[in-house]
Image 1: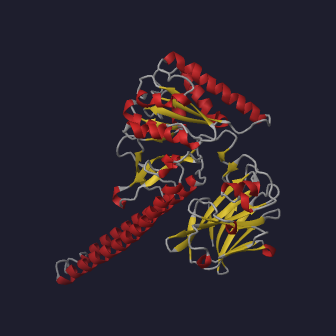
Image 2: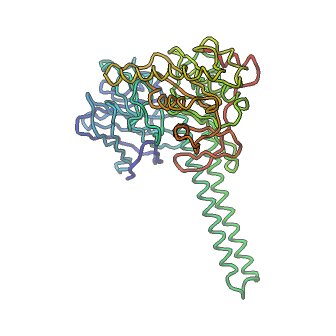
Image 3: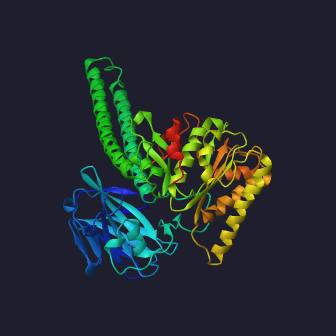
Length: 519
């Protein structure tokens, strides 16, 4: 049996799986049969005590278990979400899964923010097979909020009212009012559309790691066998040695070809999943060609920053996405704000589309006028004219810092409420033209900005090793987006290197206006 951590996955044989949970308090298990967008389609997809069976899935209430027979799950379903809930905080929850009565996985979840409902596992299709992923995504609003998040709220009766905060199992906030996040060591953040794309990214990373491992093994084996073939001077130049070298090369070619074919098969499957997802994702997470940009804006739990790829591993390109509101500021590394104007335009377009149910207010600091090409289109959502005089920077930042401090006071007194607005701060040309205290104000916004729904984007050269300690600390706390070619990013699962192509705002004025409209 394998002990899983949040986000890890294992392959299943496809046999009958039994899900159970244990905690210090009684738990109720349930299951959701979901499509690629992680939402149910009909009442039959929601398995609770009042409706305990569906094709391939059943609840055994006496045993507090969910039994899944993958071969019988409806053919167009993408996954089965296995959940547990309690009337109050359950404490430590241990989720387990067996297959054909043999234990295969265990996952220990420690809720830390009042979550009373958990998605413990996702049992999901991968090609013609099935895999299991440990999730541990928690809901402080209980089973009602969990059901609502997956489109199932209308199919179940008599569930408690939902609260405002959704969290992952380690307590990191995804939405709603939450304590100020730590700057360093932030956990891997996943949500719903965002979760789906990160899962595809993880599968791509693990497939890439398997390819790299197979290549390394084949190369080491070839080197050893070639060395053995020529180790004896007496036979080094004989036909027998030539035959050994030819055989060694053949084994190398066979090993690498098998690995390449497996990787190509994985990549083709992931590419199909990405195409299916792109058709249903909200605009903030979708490609520019997605029909989502022509539909009314839909809420998103993340934004797309660009695409990750590796030329030595084929043509697969994986969307690189982060949560919104940005729980870590984005820092676009550049010496010239004008050079990255299309990147900034794309970021703003996606941030504007991420929260259509809330008023969006944008503050722009643009001392060099790098973004005048598109800021006019943003006039309806600007808090004021873009700042192009350094004397106006401190007052604007102080206004935001004051609002965040008031929100923190309300939160600490138990009066906090989820932010009614989505604030966006674009601070370009940093730190040139800024006062020393401005770095401190930005640092305060880093700690408290989520309480006012603030997403911050900083544009400037990387200041991680700055002689100004406050500036260096701020730089290290941000998520850096490299703009120089050849600068790698490393995935969090296998530490493989990837190249990042940042999204850029399309050049055509009509398309720009369509994408940047604040809807």
